[in-house]
Length: 353
Image (cartoon, rainbow, N blue to C red; front, top):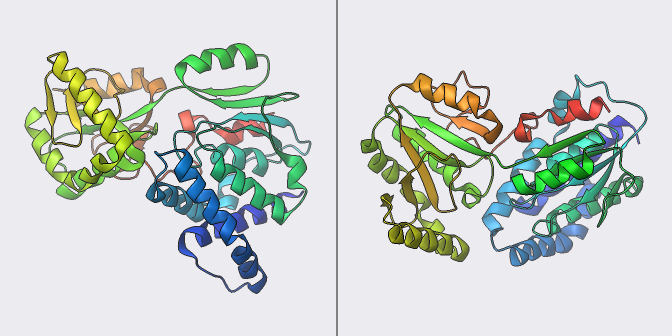
């Protein structure tokens, strides 16, 4: 399969994703008919994903599909790949996918295939419905994909591995896959540094960074640095529109559990009835909790973030624009093709195989 054929296939897949969420038909009559024929199967995959993993609400699935529909254009794919000298001989690349967000492992699949390699995929049981729908649709575009993309229960006969998991599973991955080229990802999170001069709109957008996907992703902000605790009521007010997260049973269970733990431990915390804010030096926080810390000198925060960059995916804040992981308010959950997990250039890794 040529590079041009792979680009065309993923471009069509992006149009299919757009059809799933918008039911938008296009001028190409044959493609329109094809989308219509796939409509029932796509709707089933979406409903099945939602039923199997209660964190995958219809809104969150739609958001993930929309993000990929916008990314998978011929223009974007060509711009992303233009500077990489891909090898002509494909390698077998094992992919162990995470399952915390809808389609969270899709970027690895895309990277392996677009670089001309073969993908051996071990999906997460928490997120296999949508991934398998995408793979099946690619099979319908070109049967050659059946030999290029395979889902497996156990990785064997691989030349390289991309594995995503927790800090604990990473130790196992390093031991098991250490003899081949690999990317092994661990737990990361995102933070925001607030100087007190943020606009109401910026703080409202911070709500997106905190609550999209219920805070389950490494790109979700879990820690705030503030100049003064007096900023916190203003933040609560700005993020009030996200109060409906408490109506989600699994989120509400986490909120109730953590609140009870804090009360039993006589920990000080702030509560607005849908999220808890606790003064804590840890970068990572439980679901329904946001840690915060008061700082005096922003340069101290900058130095700390550089020293701990192996734990950080995104950094939000108007004083943080010189940080390599800087992201604008409200944009942490809208990564571009060039925004790599753990800040490791996956395409460069694949081009070097």
